[in-house]
Length: 170
Image 1 (cartoon, rainbow, N blue to C red):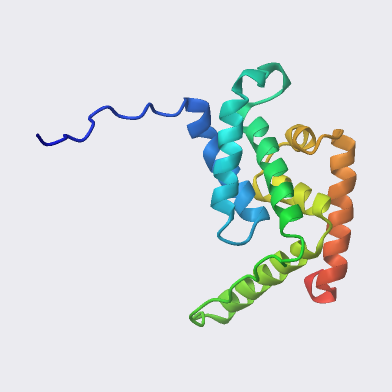
Image 2: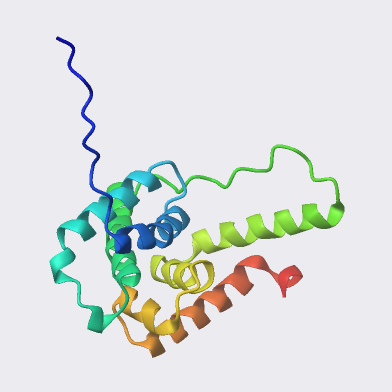
């Protein structure tokens, strides 16, 4: 007899996991600049699933809670790989057709390199605020601090970026 493949489908992930995945993936991808980001993001979602009973909607949105778990996984990853520098941002393969586009791409690469030089806490605040566009209250919840601390951390990050990038970016 032939063993027929099982027609029982795996259960679909709950809606809050599906809805939270894009935000978690963007956060982790931004903070881990090599191929390991995907494993770290999946580990974070698995932990969120296992800890789902501890989620309290009164304290914030599920996707922000999942991002907080993901940030913990990112920190663990960086602790394990402290000796390894984050992967360099790859240069574009083909030369852009327009000078403005070339300048824009170069500026973006300069900015991303400068962000990588910030202290971890400032990188996290910049990523959550500017790349993930989370509201200040949710950034504070993810970082485990007060909104005023988020403001001062972002202010310090902007000052450091201006210093790192130099006069041509002011």
